Image 1 (cartoon, rainbow, N blue to C red):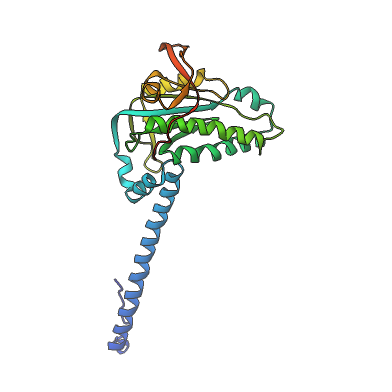
Image 2: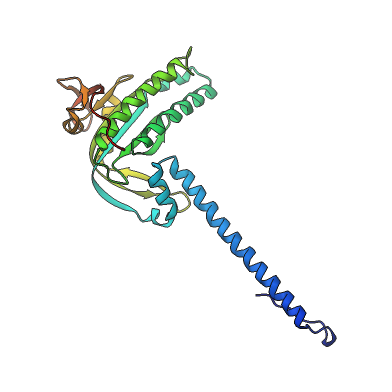
Length: 266
């Protein structure tokens, strides 16, 4: 709305003045509408860029179109597969390194590992210092989640080998241990309204972390629940080893030597 007032009767507006004001009002309305649309698109682009770093592209694009729903999505999912990976001996190793080099090598590692997870339909739950937590089968169901998780772990170890022979040549290379377990979780977007982040909650995550903690440098340990679904496709040591945990007692763990089955579809 535009409001104009003449300063005197002699300066009263004519029909030409009215038409000019109508044109000005129309142009102003178009400017305001375009500015509002641009702000919406900028918000969606920011949300999408954050989501693309965490989710496979189809899921990220769907969530970016409906960002308001991210604050209410929460439910129990009966079967997901959790992958934990972290650097063996990181604290001791990084203590003798320049901080810039530590950060650079961590960025190198996550730069190469993250696309593997996303390409195999996994979701990056979070980075925790030198560790990465990935989820398969959430937020969207995945009938091949166990194969995707194990194949991702195999490719992650191969990626670290390439870094050691390439960009990290001549340095003490990072080596990761990987643990994989499957079971129920609660998933959803948690956090302050201006910074909602997807995460999973439950004992399945804790158990996966126990397998990760027991894995040596370059090793992949999977639980019996994962092995039972993949025994024909995964090359694993048999019989399984036993690992001791503080709260879960003794757990059986299969060390994966490689993948021998067909590549699961993403």
